[in-house]
Every structure is written in C-alpha cells, then in structure tokens.
Image (cartoon, rainbow, N blue to C red; front, side, top):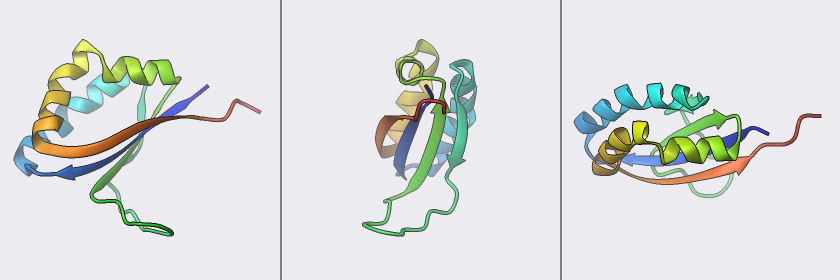
Length: 98
C-alpha cells in the first residue's frame, strides 16, 4: 500500500538548501519514491497557513519511506536540510487498492 511523506519546510539558508534540493531527488528515486508536490503554491482552505515550502513524496509503502529517511544515501542530504531549514515531517499510509 502506498505511503506519503508530507513535509512543511521553512528555509533558513537558501544557498545551502539549494545544495540539498540537488541531492535529495536521486535518493528519493533510489528508494522507489516520487515527488507529487515540491514547493508549489499552497493555498490555505482551512486552519493555519503552512509556514513554508510544502513537499509531498509518494513511496510504495511506509516501510520504504522510512528506509529512505534513515538510509545512508540520504544521510548527507538530510544533514544539509537540517542545517539549512526547519521542518515538520510525517508519513501517512494511503488507501488499499480498490
């Protein structure tokens, strides 16, 4: 069953974050993920407005999403992200195929 990582990112160092943006996509693909949204326009319909950039990544499963997040391939890009931004990230299981 597909799973989705949702991230709300507030960039604090745009130059350093640009390095992250170059490195992260390759690691996402390596773990079977694909970006569904990556910093596009976000419009609040209810509740509070996201603080920054909104990213949605689809993975084949929650286990695969967590494997990517904790992988050695993503360790370097993740360290850059942590140094260049603050974020909230969570994984949500998708619905089973109908």
